[in-house]
Length: 555
Image (cartoon, rainbow, N blue to C red; front, side, top):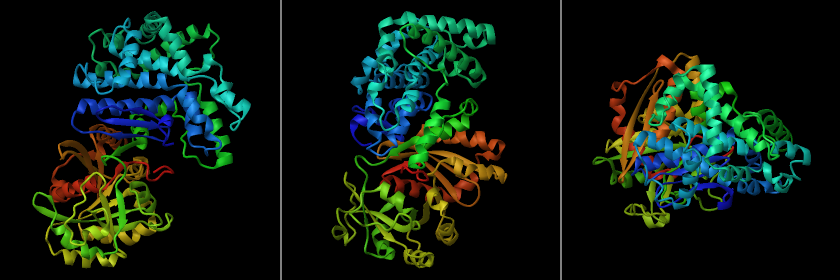
């Protein structure tokens, strides 16, 4: 879905984000960290709300169906925009403020969202404590989205379903508007009922952390997870009873799971695998590593200023780029020669190519020396054009076989750094891996760009009792701050390049899965520090985006 009506966007004069049920894409400026965090958390809350509600499951399914069948998607999305944007805006600003302090002006660059934030703030103003205010808005949004829409789809049929089949009282934004008309008293009453339940079942400890001047991070500490989950459910049930009196039908807090799984199964019986996960269980939702993995699988960071970079397969041999790259310092005053490997399908997603340029996507990954060139290959015969404008072109000179690598290194002749950067998605091709990985590791330090979800490789390290060493670094790039995580379980260094929230999620995932097998020792990193810095700079200059979905059907 590319039309602006078919996605949820957080757009303004600063960093931007957009969400579809496939993923959320972030274009963070890296200048003001608090604003970047608001944008990031905004899109995370869009994803989370869809993942835990029946209406969200309907969006997930219809977004992945062929156009002739998925016609209902835009109408379903239009019916929940206010609910989605209200939760995402309120929650993201409050969470970012808990870390950065008061953010009164953070929405100045996003004027379309000020009214939504103010309305949500008004609804919870009688609830003491930032934690409970956050949970109350979450409970309300889930209530609005937790309608029996999937039962309706089942009754009328997937292809025949129309929004008109859903009564107005069972549409998310209609419910949200109803509660807005009731004012703050409705949510305050729900909070009071939840407070009584929590005190009776769990005692006063959790409530004591969430006073009027409480700290949101303290009140949401994991030790109180069970208490606050029960609080949100109690608040949800109270709100459910209020709107139920109007004739609105609402599922239990997690009542969408069975019907969601049934719908996915019936759809896949007709259309095959649509790349949709079944809803997370309660146990998974309490597993911080599972939650981190779920978020990582859906995030995409745009590195280009606008559209994806253009790309060419160069007619030159890789050795012909040696002199060009030798004149371009990338680490201090030193140049670097970096060999990249990506699957054809990933290359097709990363760049805009001339028609019929790339080989069959089912073929093995391509290995290339790549460099930023001019608007056409002919513009760069002397290697003087650096192509760093907004419509830069990334040229790829293919390395045909592993035995060409030693000759390429010899041609380089020690003029600067040597390194290889292989995407993790390449390693899914075991035949290619057997042929190429060892020669690439001999060419120079080997870096693996993490572009698939960590569940594909970390569990094997756990089974093998591998010791993993990881460290985070901050990268300054043209006045912007980026974050990277480097970790190794052997000889290759795995690399996550994004910003600090994504890096923190990956660290959380590794820590939860590996436990004491995860360490942070600077000594092994020292010999490859210069090469790592060069590879990161190279990726920032030549990669259009980074994400963890290269192993899925949506890249």
